[in-house]
Length: 454
Image 1: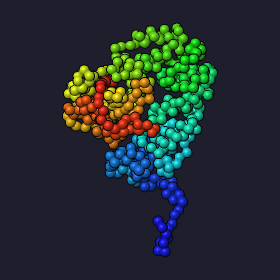
Image 2: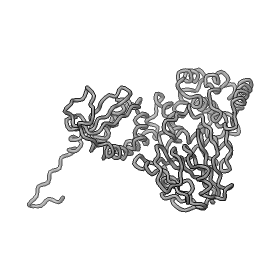
Image 3: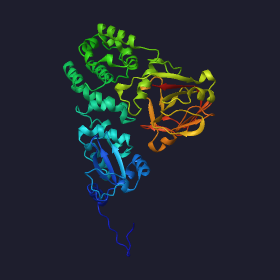
Image 4: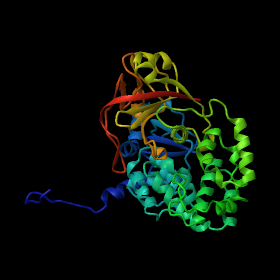
């Protein structure tokens, strides 16, 4: 505003910050009760702050507002509190939530290194974009990674969002600096018994690359032509037993170990091969016409890691082929005949240009011309040669009522992606880290397949 003879302008530096900082520590006008952790520690907060800061909270609060007299308050909360909404975060620590709330109220927070990854995971899950981007920048610059949190970052990298490949690389670099001798690696594997066998195997393989000064130490990358396999076998000989390879699922063994099993000592390799030959069943692997067997296994492991509530150590799945479009002339009616009533399905779609996209939904298909509510649904883009770099785009909480759609004239249809007989329509372009992974448009379908996970 421009000052004139009839006005007097006042500007106070940091006025809003001071007000919000005061509000953060004053529960007198709070109207939302957060129950944090398994012990349900109460925190009183303000709905307008949460709603303005997060799309998740905006949706959650608008759907759960109720009169004060209908809410039973914990003993620690004053009966006169004006509480209209109760939200529970059972898997969040109190210290983590305090960091998050500091940021939501004031735009600033002091986060201990030990909590950095946990705060990042919370921000990613609850759509706190400002906080997420700040931590992403900190982690990708390597300043945020230390020997204390690098392993946790590596194990959680896929849940940290689109930059996960950078997080993996940086975390492995930090770990490698402290783990150049086998004694240190043995101590790490023994101390981290809570890690899944898959994670321990990944760390051991990456460590064997570090021992030979390989630049790209990620598990996805191939071994260089001059890699000394005999030396790697010697390095890993006394450490393989700490991994627990036999605890892997058949899918994990086929995907993670079998392609590089020559790194195992001979007697160990023979024992493990015999072990998994007994465990294999017809459903242990599933051959797709769109992805080759190894790529299909890798992709399914990555996809199941995206499904809420499935931990890496529990990714034992059977993928049953329900429908292949080429055998039914891309008929929508045939799709519904094969898939209606089926839940937890994955659809792979191959375009005329060779690109592969698809979707996952946990609800049952039908052909009633109605939207299908979901608890979990997402669409994805995947490259045949880089399946571990597939990108997933989850349906946001406020859109889950229409996460899937069932119509007799349409094939599998998800929020943002529709199969209409011989064509696939993507309604919105999806960008990750500046690169378009799903581009809006209508594409001719060469093939699509529907699998059911169990």
